[in-house]
Image (cartoon, rainbow, N blue to C red):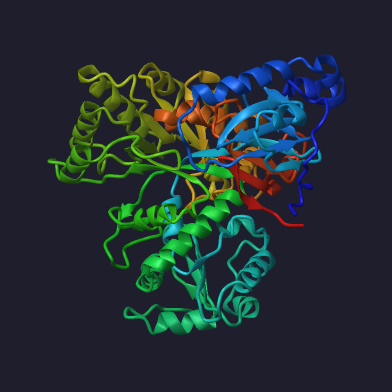
Length: 574
C-alpha cells in the first residue's frame, strides 16, 4: 500500500477545494475558500473532460488510467486553480475538479482510485536543462549524495545502497554534490567509507574532476589500474589528472547492460524527486584518456542504453535530447552532418529529439557565429550557455547578427545559466523571441561575488524564463534544493549570496512547470506543465506542503507518489 493512503472503489462527494485559487486558499483558508465556490466548476470540469480527449485524441505512452482524490491538487494553470480530484484515462487528464464520483463516470470500468488524505499534488516537474544521460552512463552503482548534509548522512546513504548491491561491486558518486553541504565541510575518509561499506569498493568524486576519495577496496583497484592512480593513506585522490585516471579506470569496466542498469537507476532517482521530463543537454566528446571529466561521454553512443530501456518498456521519465556540438574546424563537419541527417522534435511522448545545444560550436568566435547561421538556416532551436560577465553579450549580439539574415523569432533560441546577465541584454534577447533558463547551481559553491542568476530581474522582465538544475556534475538534480536557493539566496554554507534577487516559491514552481513547457516546444508545449484536461497525466504527490512549510524545509520535499501518463512510476511504501 502506498503511504499516501488506500485505494478507493467508492465514489466521493462534493469537493472542498473545487476551483479554489491558491491565493484564496492562502488568504482565507481552505474551508472558507471552498465554501465560497463549492460546486462552481464541477459541471464545467466534467464537460471539459468529455471534450479533452477528443482534442488530444492521439495515442500516448504510458497510457494508464488513475483517479487521485481528496488532495490539494495545485494545477499550476494560469488561474492558480486548486482542485480536489484529478482523473487520468489512457495517459491523459480527463477530469480536474472536486468529485470522485463525477470523475468515475468518465470510465467504462472504474480505474484504480487513491485517497490522498489531503496531500499536496503538483504537475510533473520539467527540468529544461540537465545532463541525465551522463548520470545514466555513470560507472559503478551511482548513488546521488545531493541530499546528504553530513559525513554521517553519506555513510548511511552508502550503507543503505550496499544492501541492494552484490558485494565487490563499486558504489560510486560522481558529481552533483559538494562537501560544502556537509556539516564537516570535507569528504569522508577511507576509514569512514570502510566502516559504511566494508564489502564494497567506493568512489566519491566532486564536480567535473574531483577531488575524490575511495576506501580500502577501491584503493586496491585504483592502484592496480592500467594507469595507476595515486591514492593517499586516507583515501584521498587529487583533483585533475589523478581523478581523471580513477574515473577512466571505472569507465573501462562498463558493459552495455550495466549502462542500462544505470539508466534505470537515474530514472528512478528522478522520479523520486518529482522530475518527470528532462531536456538533456549532451556531453563533451570523450577522448578515452584521463583528460576526460565527469561531463565527457561518447555523444554518438551514450543515448543507446536509454533507447534500449525505452524499447524494453522500463522507462519512468520523459527524455528530450539536445545535441551538443564543439566543432573547432570552420567547416563545422559534425554540426553540418547533424543538421543534414537528424530531425528536431522527432520521436514520441516518451523520448523525442530537441535542438542544438548547450554548445553549438567551440568558443565564441567566427566559427561559432557560422554555426549559429547554419542552425538558423536549418530552422533548428539553439541553446548556448553563459557563465561570465561578458559572454552573454557576445552570444546575444551574435543572435542579432544571425537574425538580420535569417529570422529566429520563431525558433526559441535560449541562453542558459546567465549568472551575470543585465536587463539590457535580457530585453534584447526577448525582442528576438528568445528565453533564458535559470538554475541554482551556485548553491553548492557560490559566493557573494560569484552568485546569480538575477532571478527577480528576469522574472519581472517578462522574457520567457524557465527553471533547470544543470545537474548532475556541478549541481544537484533535486528541484527543491534549487527552489531553496532561488527563494532564500543562501548557498550550502548558509550564506546569503544572491540578495535582492530572490523570488517566491510559487514563482519557482511556475518556472519548473507551466513556464518550462515553452522550452520544450514542439508537441510538448500544449500537453505538459499543468494539470489540465487534455494534457498528459504527469503529476507528483509531495511528502510536505510545498506552499506552506518553512523555507528551511524546502530542501526536504520529496515525492511519495510520481505518476507518468497515469502510470505510478515511484511510490513510497508504508
